[in-house]
Image (cartoon, one colour):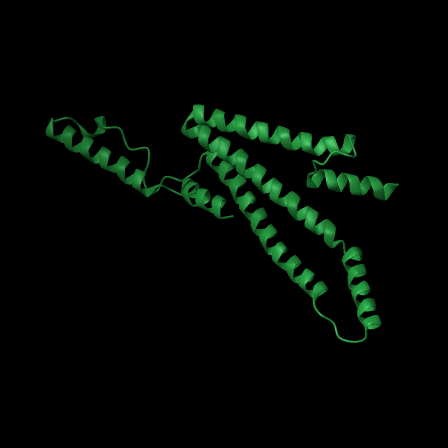
Length: 200
């Protein structure tokens, strides 16, 4: 979240009018008008500025796309952080001390354990891992687009790094499905195996 926020704080400015650029454009027109007047030319020979306060602002499509990816990534990472705090509270409740006889404590502990299974807490934790991976994927895609607009060589280098990472992730997802003994696991693979064994 902190990393994405740093980038979003910079790029979100492209989604609103750039008043400094408008001022520069109007000042350039004003200087051109003064020069034309000094040279005895008609002010109509000076082209009007393309930007002024009344010009409707429309952000560029690449800027909207990059910011969209990064804002979604930020939202997913914040949702994950909030959910992790909630899950930590659930686990603390599960492990909290209980009073009563040993038999009563054992029954209460079993009731809590059954509740964790019945309400799919383990699946929620796995889904949060998947959300974090999706947030990272969206951030990487936005970073590639952002860097390609700044410098195509750096953008392509980042694209290669992101592509290799995605390929490695895909292989780590597929291999445990094909080979049960394979230690490489991802949240997608765990979800698939859980559904597979549930059907059996």
